[in-house]
Image 1 (cartoon, rainbow, N blue to C red):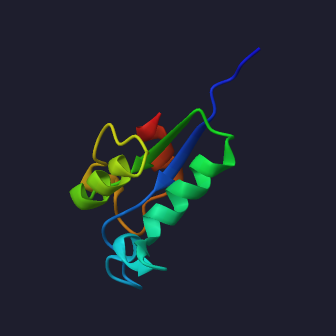
Image 2: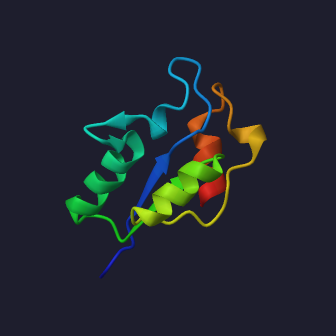
Length: 91
């Protein structure tokens, strides 16, 4: 029996600690790239989905091989939003 395994990568555009951290470069590429690449390289996931409220992150994530079928609404994109709300929205 084959099961569908989804990787959900939360990537808000806002950050209190380090502004724009998901698009900040580490080893020449944005942080989000490294997360998506690790998920792709693992070979574990049938689909890799990025949940973001930021159009720039969405465009980059799509070009990097992740699915971004929607932008996360602002009311669940805050720094105090429970992760379960993000998961529910994605599913």
